[in-house]
Image (tube, rainbow, N blue to C red; front, side, top):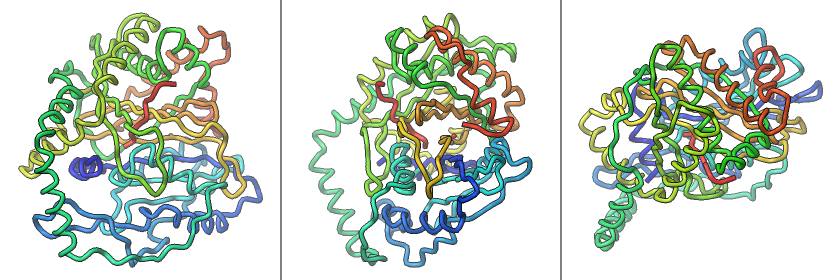
Amino acid sequence: MGDLLNLVMDVGPVPMQVGACLVVDAGPGFSQGEARRLIGGRIEAVPRLRQRLMPVPFGCGRPVWVDDPAFDLDNHLQIMKCPAPGDVRALLDLAAQVIARPLPPGRPLWSITLVTGLDGDRAGLIVCFHHVLADGIGGLAVLGSLVDGAPVPSPTPFPEPAPSPRRIAAEAWTARLWALARLPRAAAALGRAVAELGPPSRAARCSLLQPVGPRQRLETVTARLDDVRRYAHAHGGTVNDALLAAVTGALHTLLAGRGESVPELVVSVPVSIRATTTSDRLGNRIGIMPVRLPAAGPLAQRLERTAAATRRGKAVTSGASTGLVTSLNRILAGAGLLRRLLDRQCLIHTVCTNLRGPREPLTLNGATVSALIPISLTRGNVSVVFSALSYAGTLTITVTADAGRTPDLPILLTALRGQLTAMSRMTGSGTPPDSCATRAAEGPTAGGTDASNRTR
């Protein structure tokens, strides 16, 4: 059902695509050709990467995944040179362009761009996929299948023939009959969905809510994961609670600079209803948790109130809301009203996702992946979104903003760094947490969606 939701929501100028940017310490012995060959062989371990969505006959439900008999790696993997000056700032600008470019709908919905020419003997890898292919945890499973140490896939027949129209129709109507049999439980499921979403509550009108366009701006801020965790635990929260408190505090500073006072912000927090997945079991299994959070006041108090709010939200978040939201959005899309609604919604101010990545550094063709940067895009009228990922002891927060709506983005970044620096200082660490992000602007660095957002 989550897959169908991401198909329905793909309206407007910004595609429903997410991704990641890997910075690889390539060194002089790193071979582009060998890296390409390895990636080409390893995608066989992820069946979905060689499948496309096939429309079904009228009345037979949603599209189905089938093997693409015309699959060609050259349609999905390209090599590009990083624009001057070849630093991570240029790499992120390129990543924003690549991920905001719609993937061809008739092919498997992903792409990988190997970026050469970074300074310091480094290379970049921009991974892009449509949100219908996987949620955040699924995306990490895909990445885990492409790097060194991934299991060698066993040979499987390819392509498997697509199901016949008769079989598709039979399965669709069988599913509908089963749904009728489960009608007595439908009312309870509807009740859980309504409880998960909570009563409708308008988010305060402010300049964060402006229709966005396809030009996206990516920036990263980093912190030591242990510093954030210790500060969060000291105030009864999790890493995710500390992240949310930092984000809302930074947004409050941004709005204050615009002459606006918004003491509470509503943040949409995707919550995974599975702890892990594998590359052969992708798709989307998330719940939707809109949380009203304090944006003003001392950091410690805001974190404690944020932790209490997320605990209440998680207690009723089971993923039941996905079906209800999907059904409502299908109706609106069919009536041609969905894009209008997304451009004018007043239920949330921003989206903040958080994923737990690998604890140890990954390698690609023997080269260390020094940074793993999550990337989500702004859509509808949400002009700024946040994606966080912990990797090898570093928490990387990617701030994605509509390029035309946020000329004051540096104010937001400075405020976010300030929130994280305060956490670091209060836990006894005297080094500013954003040294990696600072290097991103200078050169060497240390960035759907979706999130696990589980306690840690």
